[in-house]
Structure formats: structure tokens, C-alpha cells
Length: 258
Image (tube, rainbow, N blue to C red):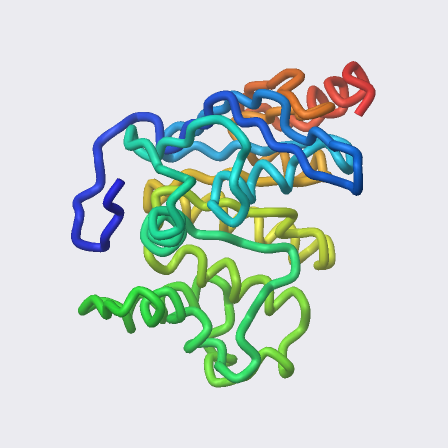
């Protein structure tokens, strides 16, 4: 799969699809199966939340989707194009040009200021579109850090650093944003701001979002919640626009004993 920056995106109503993902790890002489045949899809413009107990494979799933880790078996496609996860170049180009990734622990570059950290995907991709600076300014306004653009990570709060990492993930208008517990290390107010930004900004640019979270409140921002347990998708729940949309999530967690 040639994922160069100059290749036009394939047209598909399915932004990302995982088929029969398996992954295990070796612990001494023992084998620990983590993913046991995961099948999952993400529609264009859709937000899907992944919930499950600790150790159920949520982060492993996102790492395999992004090519940070390699599944033992299974297939990944983006906008209908199969990604060869066995080839390092294809995994690198997948992350560079098709995905935006938000980590729980920010991963900002300490020697770059806020604006430079947001611009990092353009620097790594060695391309600088004409609207780069206006795009960065737009995102700085979205996250409310226009006046902190020249500040460095050590001068920011944890919540501000996470907002910068989200702007960085969105700056190239990726087809898919993968977010691993993006609200895990911030206070509730910032957590709500993060969810609003992911929901509204991603929707407006037709980026799909796959979000790992332990929080039913934050999962309730999604269009659909998939529950992972013992390495498989145990169930899923479509959410409507009801103000009571959080209640079915709690009910499903109890039903599945998660």
C-alpha cells in the first residue's frame, strides 16, 4: 500500500476496518493472548468509544491499528485500502499521512513551543501546505491557547499539554484519529473540553475518531460504544441524541460485568 502524501485518498464510507486481529505476548515460557479475533469498523465521520476492564486489550488494539505494534494475524484497511502491517514503511506512512494519534501521556517535544509542537506532523512529513500557519492558528483558537503559542511544555499544565497533543493529532485533518485515554490525566472540566473538541472538530473535518476510555461520561459523546472483554468485542451499543444516553452505557457495563 503506497500511502505517500501525494496519493489521493480512497473514497469509502468505512474509514477504518479491523478483521480478525490476534495478538499475544510471551512472558517467559508462557503465552499471554491479548486479542483473540477482533472485528471492528469505523464509519467516516463517526466517533466510536472502546470500553473494557484493564488488561482486556484496548491499548494493544489501538497500537496494532496504528502500526506501533504488529498483530500476529489479521487485516487492517483504511478507506478501503489494505495496509501491509508487516512492512515498516507502510506502518510509518500510515501514521504520518492517514492517522492522528493522541496518547494518554502527551508526548510533546520539550524543546519545541506550542505552535511548533502542533506543526510537528508537517515537519516529519516534510511538507508545508500553503494553509499550514492558518490551520495551526485555527486550532490554537479551538483549544483556547492562542496566547500560549510561544510557551514550552514545561510552562503548561497537564490539561494544556493534552490539548496541544490533540491539536497536533488534528492538524493534518487525518482520516482517523486514535485516542488512548485522552482524558485520563486531566481534571473533569478539561476532560469535557477535550471530548467537545474531538467531537466537533473531527466531525467538521470528517475525521473519524476511535477513543479508548474508562469513563461512561466521556464514552457518551460517541456515536457507538464497543465493549471489549477477554480479547474480543463482547457487545456494542449505538447511542442516540437522548440526554439520558449515559444510562445505557452503565447498564451495559453491569450486564457484561466490566
